[in-house]
Image 1 (cartoon, rainbow over the protein chains, first blue to last red):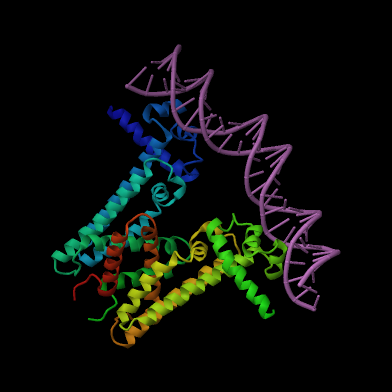
Image 2 (image 1 turned 90 degrees about the vertical axis):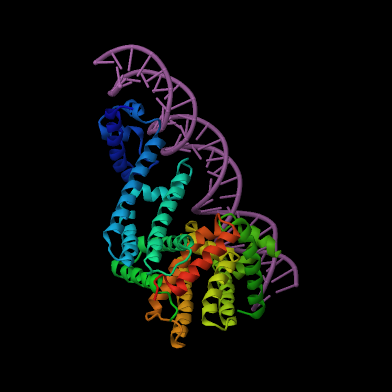
Length: 194
Length: 194
DNA sequence: ATTCGACTATTTTATAATTACAGTCCAAAA
DNA sequence: TTTTGGACTGTAATTATAAAATAGTCGAAT
């Protein structure tokens, strides 16, 4: 694969990202993509073998954006508690921005695509590992009390996912922040008096 | 409404519960229901005005079962911590048993039914109030540290909902229990060392 | 190495014909 | 008077069929 060819692949990925975002996977045609990059349809097939392959590349591209934003926001925090807080806030903020990735992970209409299962599993692992690392660090710094950081990370990630719906749907910004703070408070302190 | 008529309504509700559970709302016909109770279809209309009305009655009937089981299991516990634990475990255990209610709350294919929104809102309030009462009691007994028990209850109920998918889908019994224990542990103790 | 017009095989959609079903009516039975 | 069910209707869902759209191929031209 030459560099110039790889460059065009990236252009196609970025343009397709917009087109998929606008029409959705099913409704975007190869001609839509070809028009968006200013080439004939057949030319697209010189760079990618199928529509699904393009979409997969788009989803992985967006997953990368999310991963990088998560890591940056976690690294920016000094205090270990702020790392978790940043993680949660960034996840909520960026998640919907990478719309094709978001749909790939949440929309069951895309489950028939071959790579989706793997993508979901991969991203779940990424999330769990990220949270696990933070918990681990907190434990080593003698700030956190969690012993089995892997299982705790799973529990936290799982629970956070429960916030997606009430977050993205209905409620207003203020209710959201209040709920999130409350959740973080319980997460940090627990409910038992010691 | 005479007593005898009310009695038949209950019979229809119980039988319909089974039929709906077997075929799903859309696929069960009024004739299915009529056959199940051993009457003609028109007779059913003497007791209920529509198919939707029957389904609503079934869902409320099952919601009642869930409510009673939740309250019993919470009352059975002496320790305040066991109340929460019982609540979570019972919720998980009974939730899928009341299948029509479960579908009414989770399956978006039923959203077009008029009463569903109200039912969901009502049940969410029930859950939040139940958890809130437990938290309140724990606070008064000086065992819990939560100040705003209402918001904390919302956060907990919301988070628990996140467990439904990993719970009911894939994973085995053992993984489930491990995840749940871990979640409860974080919920009780938090992650910060004090 | 890269592009694209012309082509094909397969899906998707649009339309019409058929069937299934929720709900009504009324006469008969209890 | 209360309860039942057979016969009926209008509408919605399903199926059958034809027409259009589209993913992917191929080979000739840059």
